[in-house]
Length: 200
Image 1 (cartoon, rainbow, N blue to C red):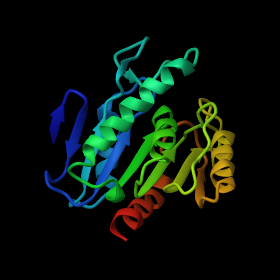
Image 2 (cartoon, rainbow, N blue to C red):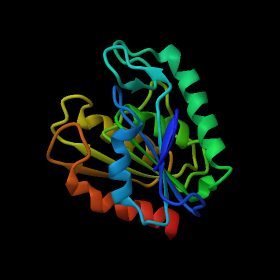
Image 3 (cartoon, rainbow, N blue to C red):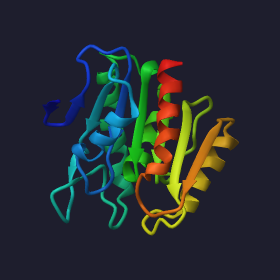
């Protein structure tokens, strides 16, 4: 594993394909790294990005404040993530990159990633940002969400699916019985989706 103040990386230094991970509110870059390694082949680069802002109530990070939601901070967070993804594209093309986000990271993945020529976006337990409209065309999207999620309601992903389908995008929603997390039952679907997008 190689580390940088703003990101952690697993896998080959010179790869043909990549999985980029965006953690949730209050977590950090290492939160999804082990999961990412389970979802891709050894030939795939895995990069976990660290959110730019310190979390107000602990040691983790945030893409923008959530209590209350600071929509005014979203444009800066959006620009920050877009610049970082474009920088990563210098070594692996966006067309061979899948972006996977959890919770706040999923909202960021959809917001920023939908406007880029990514291979795909996996949004786990996510929600739509205020005023977000998916462009057409946009990358393939896979949504996962727990039906009993007490943090981000399941209906948030249902709304995302409706918005994506309304824009002409095929978006699959994989539900599971459980709360706010990435359940083991959805890992085969995530693995298949990532492989189809970057290896297909």
